[in-house]
Image 1 (tube, rainbow, N blue to C red):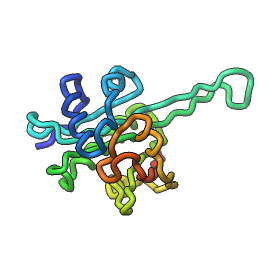
Image 2: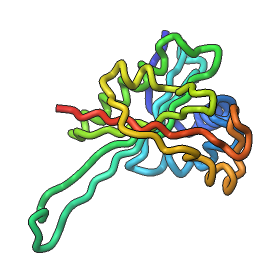
Image 3: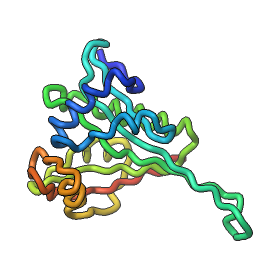
Image 4: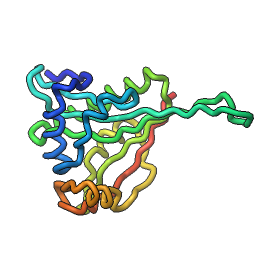
Length: 178
């Protein structure tokens, strides 16, 4: 049985381990700062309340327009589904979709109407979360080639497909909520 819940500080080492295996060594190291941030959120998939098998990281943003302009008093807000990973032995069982659904519900509860999803497309043309994003109503907007190249070099993380530098493409998806 899978339970989706907010990550706790005790989960950090498990989240980093999954990230290292699935996203690349060193990709997700500043996680303690993320957990302390009010706009950043990490949910975990807890298998039988014994084992963390996946996680999703998303953040929300808001801009309040001030001053004497047409936009004064209006607020724009949105959310970005930044990173999701599920341990290899638990993939293709629907746990990623459950994490996405819970993240979307959490975002809806904040009355946010626009969600951006970011997926990795490796040089072989495989995309990590395309299927669950499309299944949940996201529309693919664009691709950014070599998106993680600079970060992989500067932060010295090793992509599990490319190594270093990472040559993966970012696929950007949008979901507009009513």
